[in-house]
Structures are given as structure tokens and as C-alpha cells.
Length: 340
Image (cartoon, rainbow, N blue to C red):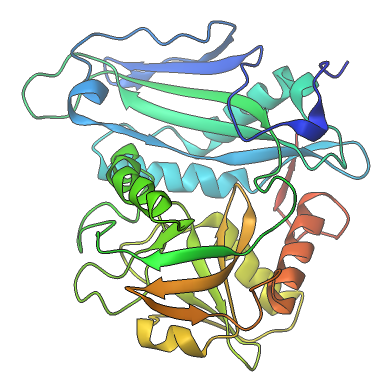
């Protein structure tokens, strides 16, 4: 039985569900892990995560499809990205197979919280890992906890998609050889001041430029950029300090193999942006958010195909990828993980 929730009016916030998954790393090995109804985390006051921010996370979604199945979208890629994050932060790797199994367990156990097909809502899944043992010298923790919780969320855009106005930020999101390419909590902590400041100035998001030369487009605080040229080529920035978005990789495949568009993954000079026809931000939460205007210290760049609504190519990309996720369009092999 589905929970008695007003699915059509859900916000993008946390609602406690019945079960979550927990596994502990101790004496050099992960335990077998289990589901629990206890939503509280109890750790030492000196835990590595609290002292030195030793933590990483992932984000993915489960959906009810057209034919009534509950599915996840490409959880293997989230598992692989979390392996990269853990290795970079000197944390023990939680294997890809166990990650996918844990996601499966959590979604199946909370199936009554998966929003019904057609409501626009989804079940957001948050795997995360942190140093749990006491650390006072600057070094990795010896014990860790891997957890997954899930929460039903509404569509990222309440009341429909409105193109965003973003600004070129004076802040750097990542260091040239730092941690921008992994999903570490510390990257997001660093971006909070910049996003709050952007909101105070009347902007929806920040455009971060490359930290080395500040001439190339990188990403925003939580999403990758996708551009469309006037001759309908899809362009995405390539850089060693941006997060490899699973949504972006999926959209690029869709552009090439479903829509027959030319695709370029390359360095994007900020000076080129004024010549693009469309711009979007892509990520798990919204899939694609159209950008209407980019402001560079008072100089406005207005994207011709995004001031009122999504541009035509962005809309096709959005419709095709969400159609694949929801089971209306046949998916490439291995993209859809069926829970039940």
C-alpha cells in the first residue's frame, strides 16, 4: 500500500522513510550490513567526519514506470563514482556490487514511499560514507560507516520550468589539482557562501570558471553545463576539476544515439558562451534546468532560445531522457535497474 502522502504537492525536502541501510568498516573490513529502522547516527565527538570532513556521498533516484515497475537509473555509475571519491579521500572502498545491492534493499524496503507514476515526484536515494572513529591528528579515520537513506521528493521546479539567471562567480569551486572531480562533502561546503551570496544578489546559480586561468567554463555548485550551438551541436565542458555527472553522460549518449546530434566534449572558453543558442544545467535533481541569462559583472548574455522556456534541443534531450527513465522509451542495455 502506498503511503498516504499528497504526492502532487511534495517539495524537494527530507521526509523520513521506514528503512535505511548501514554497514560499518572496522578492523580492515566491512561487516555484512543490514537494514534498520533507526534514523539516528551515533558517532564519537572526535569522529573523523566532524573534525576533518572525511565524507563523500552520492545521489540517485527510483521511479515508478509506465508499466508499474519500480526502477533505478544507472546505479552502477553512482557506485563507480563513489569508489573514486573514497579512494581520493583515503576511505575504504564499498564495492560496486554491494553498493547496488544496498540501493536495491533500501528501495524495495521503502516501496510504499515510491511516488506513483505520473505525479512528477520520485524517490531520492542518498548513499554516503564517513569517518566514524576518533581522529585528533590530521590523518584518515580507522573506522567508517556507509549508509543509504531515501526520501520522496517532488519535482525540482514547482509550477513548471522557468529559465535560470546565473552569474559568473568571483569564487573558485575547486583547486586545479584538488577534489572537484569527486563527490566530497567538503566541495559543497565550500560552495555554500557563493550560492547564498548569489541568491542575495538576485541570481539563481553561479557559473564557476576554471581555477587556473579563469577563462574556461567549469560547472555550477551542483550541476554540469550543457550548451547547444546555433547549428545544433551539443557541447559540454571537459575539465579535470569538474564532477563527472551521470546525467550529463546520459544526455550526451541520448543526443548522439537517439537524436542524431553532433556532440563535443571539450574545453569551453567563456568567450564562446555569447555565441551559443541554448544553455542548461544538468544533474540528478532536475535532469536539465534551462539557463536564460548569464551575467558577467554587469554584462548580460541572453541565450536566444531560453528566456521564456527550454530551448528546442534542450527540450528534446529532457523529454527523451525522462522518457527512458520512466519506461516510455526503450533504454540502452543496462541503464534501468529493476527493483520490483
